[in-house]
Length: 166
Image (cartoon, rainbow, N blue to C red; front, side, top):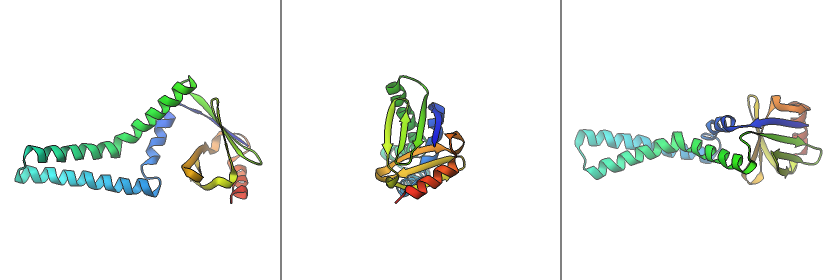
């Protein structure tokens, strides 16, 4: 079975939206940054009512800006930078990702880079509509799309992966 799709900057930027609440660590960090942002807003309101010196205002505003950056902006900058690195490495603004599911291994090819993964290392599979993320050991993941199969189908592929997983 073979899954094939084109990767460009717009597609990679759309992936950034899913990262904020994926995984326990990201959820904890999200809650902490929301707490920092709300606390900063409370401090700013308190300083507006009761008064505060310049350093108090400065710290509260910096913490508010930092929480806004971490909650809403940073992941897009990281993904944009990652796209730039790939595009520069591959020498093209758009490339094809091919994921081949053989009887013994999963072969992922991004433009000219080839990665071989083993079925035994698959930890879990998450489906989000048309999108499927396959998680492996050591925080490795690959993304495929159900409608991007050029050979076989998602149902056949899922059956193969489930039968080969530990």
